[in-house]
Image 1 (tube, rainbow, N blue to C red):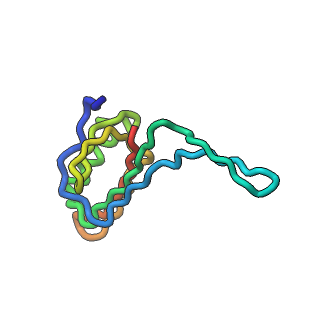
Image 2: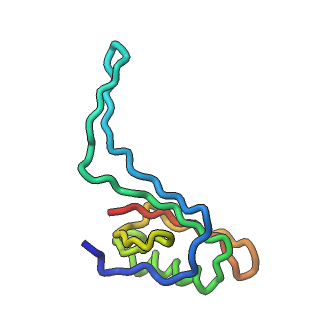
Length: 116
């Protein structure tokens, strides 16, 4: 079910863009060294690590406002479109965005999003 909040329109992120599927297997080791496994979930969520290496100050402020005010410091989920597949995901921030000034009015920004 889509969220009512949409991720702001920003410049496309830089590559690499990392996507990691959730580990959805329970593993139990036996005394003889064998391992039993079974599915942990019926659905596997993805985590996305997204980076912009030269984000202009104006876009940094848009993203920071989106995080702080629109998603209530990352508490609310939102719609995000994957930049390469154009598939829409409902995600939330797993931690605050990381902002690092690299030039006057330009930032390296990274965010981590997890599918809800």
